[in-house]
Amino acid sequence: MRLTKLEHACLVVEKDGRKLVVDPGSFTTPLVDLHDVVAVVVTHEHQDHWTPDQLTHLLATSPEAVVYGPQGVADAADGFDVHVVADGDTVEAGPFTLSFHGSRHAVIHESIPVVDNVGVLVDGRLFYPGDQFTVPPVPVETLAAPVGAPWLKVGEVIDYVAAVKAKLVFPTHEQTLSGPGLGMHFDRMKASAQSVGGDAVELAAHESIEI
Image 1 (cartoon, rainbow, N blue to C red):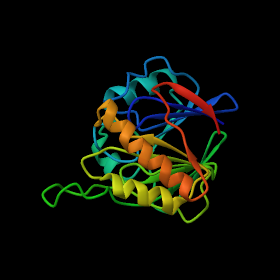
Image 2: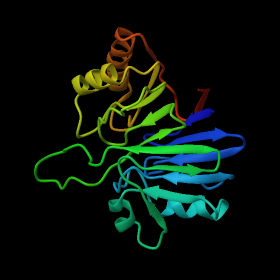
Image 3: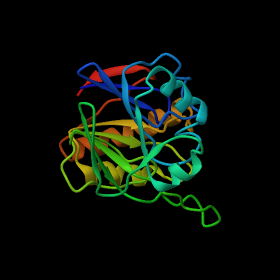
Image 4: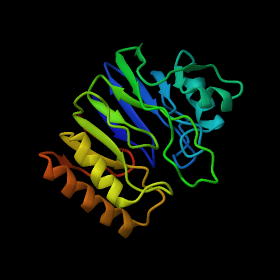
């Protein structure tokens, strides 16, 4: 599989000429010319993880693409056909097998409602938790780990990376950090990954790797 990290929380995974898009939100360059998309996963309803414009662009170029998300996304995405998924569900989407883990967004503050959130495991290899620190009940080869957000501190990132024990980790959800701040957080992430026998790589926006 070929993985391309876009800005912030958005990922594009390509396999056999077909594409999976995860969390195309407001901090990501408009996806106006992306073709052969079979599925879009929206982990939760917050704007930095999806917008109506991003879904409209994707469905205009790939009208057969299926949108998956938790009930909160289906409720928020008025006018879009969202296939509701929850913790423990597995679906086949083109060449991809998608399994979903977790159910709730991490707590930001007691005054802010906690929304639905599902993480997605792609082909049993790549896990992206959305805005939570869910540890899936199966081994993970590659982990997309949130690195900066109003709901996290770097100590939690260190603990999460150590708990998942992925062979390779890369940071996502970085747009809330300055350049130096991202570098500091990534160094902590990499040290944690290496402490449990893995490694970490920092991907620039639109950079791709084979996984």
